[in-house]
Length: 130
Figure (cartoon, helix red, strand yellow):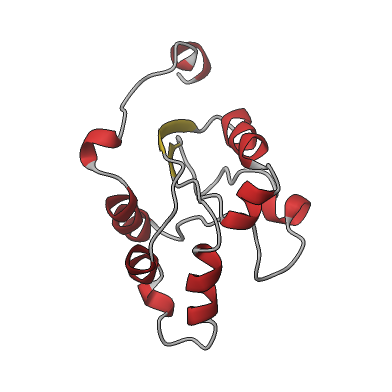
């Protein structure tokens, strides 16, 4: 998900491009303003942390772009260094990525309906992956 600071800085296209260059496949994307309830659910694992309220407030400060990406082995082929290259401040770190498959499944269900996920095969896939 591209956070409000990434959207405000016009980095959505560059972030998508980095994932695509690494061979990831985009299966869902939205441009939206997240409400407090959704953000509290999304970050529920951080609810007891002192920065939680500030995080929710920041995430409501502008639109976000949640996305679902598929890859052949995402644990071994992490996309570039988006945060390293583009982040200006630790708390405003441009993107959110799920830290595990169970987290990804939970987060995808929060942000997308099943009907919004698009299963497809790129034409190049048979010639790239054996």
